[in-house]
Length: 348
Image (tube, rainbow, N blue to C red; front, top):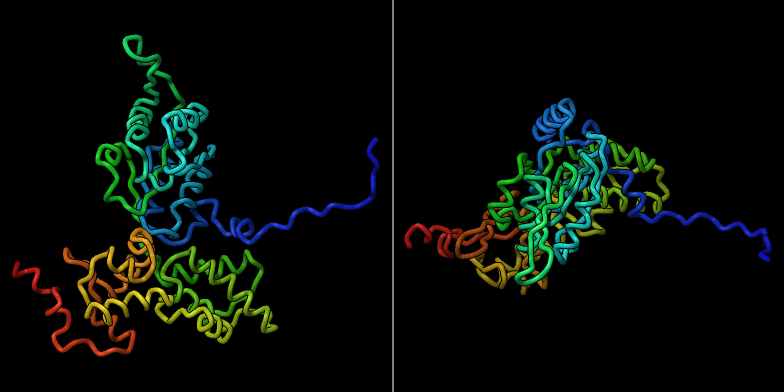
């Protein structure tokens, strides 16, 4: 017989990742930034609900951290439907996909992250499911094999990718709605900082919020991560609010500059300048030089450096710009990048 020892077992304390889930918006009205995309989605969602139909399949394109997964969840909430999430690498065999699809309820949102990594056999199974809401399943082997069509409930597939260029044409053509994420504007980033600070129950001054937003690479995931670190620095310094001096000191400690460049970003630019005379240099060579994978270089570092005008891509490789020299306090070559291939491309 068990005895009641009288010892209370406290509930597990949620970790930072779990608490961070509360920062994610649940509805379009709470999703800040990407206004044109939101306006169009609002129309498509309202029209689908009025007709009593599933929303057309949705293709989300953009760099990491801009809110693709969050938007998929928001769409499910707006449709008042279920949400099932997976990623392409987790779908190893066609039966993995079949198991998920056959369990979907009518109108559910099925989210596949990194959809560019789907295996061909799984992708082909997905085609018919997206178009006809059926699964093409082969039963038996050899001469006894036959095709069985299994009906599934109408659903909305939301596919997200950072590499739209390597998604197959047949798969892209089956998406009725395409949304391209861009880096967030300064005003939107400041609004995100204020909203997240309120949810974290921490005060932040307006000038501190502006600097934090400016230093966050136009990416909500980055600004929320930095906000939590600034909260730590404020608490350590005995401040009951995140002030401008706290942010300035915190960014200096984290080696993040006024443009939001981290140490690794600056190292990329310096390596191209110092080892490869400003470029061009190939992606694989550059990735080895900085100790990162080509995928990390292309997906995380390059998009912001390119959009910020600090880095250029050419058929011959990566080249830094005069802005990069200026930001690093270096003097560009007298002839700029011309002698290193920037203009010679026109002469080939």
